Image 1 (cartoon, helix red, strand yellow):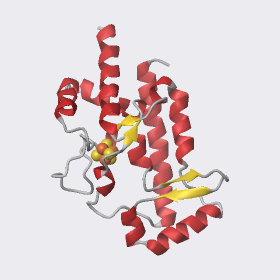
Image 2: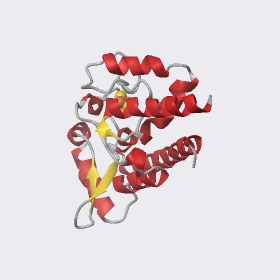
Image 3: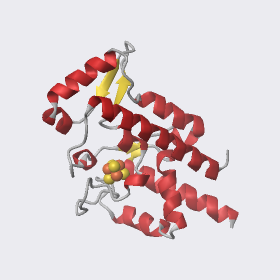
Image 4: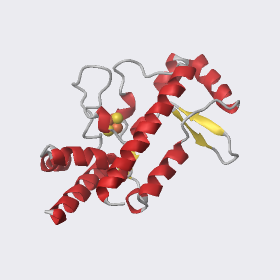
Length: 190
Ligand code: SF4
């Protein structure tokens, strides 16, 4: 697979995941609080390079890759550079369409514990707003209702590119590395 095919494969994986999440949200009735975005304010979000390749390619195609490299370098590096607290609307992600895998999974997925049991991973806001819904959802998951499973989605990305998913970086570093991979690729092709 060349880099363009890998980007397409990541986009396909995200599309499939988004459908799974929509189905999960529909049966569980769990949803983000309008305009929340609190999970993006965590200082220790980590991601792999591969999950931000579609965003990096988008920046390259719009001649914004260097602008974003400078933006990341001049940021304080603690919060995700994509986060825009001034943004109105449903959330605070300024690049929602291009957000990473962790951004999609968090709140609406399960991890498999060491006993093989699926445990819902959701946020404090959802737990606080809808505690009964969270308990009911966990019960249903244990009874076989479908939920996106984190490790399965990470495995799908591993299968696309082992090297670019081997390590987790602070999210800004993952975005920066993705931009550098794209710039390197296009530099060689031109
Ligand atoms: S990419 Fe968007 S959704 Fe993900 S942490 Fe950054 S602001 Fe939040």
